[in-house]
Image (cartoon, rainbow, N blue to C red):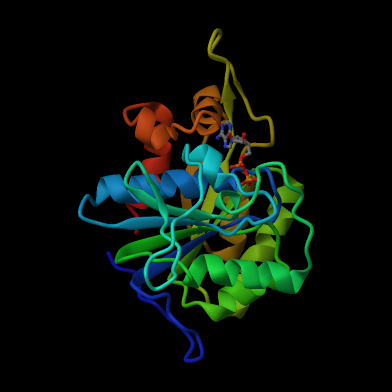
Length: 261
Ligand code: ADP
């Protein structure tokens, strides 16, 4: 099903892009980028005629280049727009393509905002059905202005079941609601670890935190993804699990939330 865009009048759409889905989290390290990458791949795989792009707006710690196994400088088109880099059928743009991998990114809020604006609008996205945006973690000015400046079809919020991550996820959901961005739901990540040898299950970050939060906020749980070595390895080697192990159990958890869109 289509999610309707509810842009405010002052919001300028991104040229050629039908629907923007942002993936957000309160805290860093909870699996936001992993979710964004696999969501983009799953959208492209599930609806094979759909064109999908992935924007790494996490300009402080761009991880999309590594996760999508992409490197290099975008070429400029005749109209001076940056050409996204392509892998696994996904058009990608990231600050990581424009700066050295280890260069410190020290800048102020306004600079971050203008960097994200460039990554969003000075890119030749072509025609996209979905642009998945990996947001910077947190709920500060940058997240707020992104949410206000582009028409966003929906936000996916990622959290571990840990209280401290949930508190921040709660704030994130409230922020989107304030600016009238529909929250599509929560993804609970790293909820359970099953020992590959003895099969014992451990809830390292707690069991049902995101489920509780979903009830409190009246949101859906879009996915409940275990903590699994394959997911981490797949991300780190630039072979995202939805692409590299589409039949695995871990992927079935990821696919689940795509069926909602
Ligand atoms: P964030 O974008 O929130 O900072 P990342 O997606 O970069 O988080 O994930 C942080 C680290 O955790 C990465 O090394 C990633 O591969 C790993 N990771 C994320 N989700 C899982 C999971 N479900 N199981 C195992 N490792 C995971």
